[in-house]
Length: 202
View 1 (cartoon, rainbow, N blue to C red):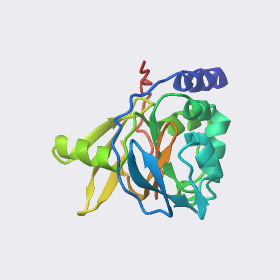
View 2: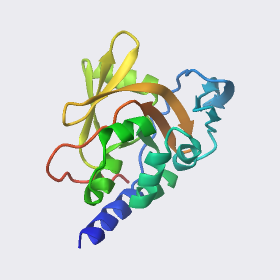
View 3: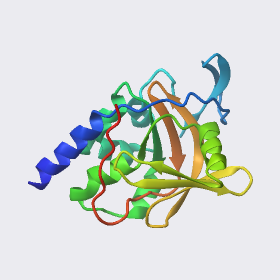
């Protein structure tokens, strides 16, 4: 029964379509690419180039720092959403962050993976804009149905807080993908207690 519920949840996530904000920003990187007519820099993760013509899941799978996360996304079926034609933002914890979080029950894995996904394209400039417009703390609705809070941590760094009050800093910004953005974070973000209602956007 639990497996059916998890599979149904993952299938629902895979059917979502997010809307893009289309903002453009600069990142630490090694190679210029063109995005929206502007030259931006192409980030690398763990020495591997992240290519903007790949989908989120393909870039994540190519990252040596995200093997644990990529495997969890695939195991739950949530990965199929990250290969879709919508636009998504993923706050992607590294292998070290996943290890520090410890083993978690498989029954909640799909929910926790979809909590890391925000429908829509939120690069660093879009995050800065929504933080400013919200008066310093922007609430981002996740695919899981919960909320992540984005706010400034000092003059230049954006921090993301989960529903349990845990905070992750963005270590690598603006990994552009064909269907969205990856931000590499240094801690695992987790939903609060109780069951949330998954977001379905058309």
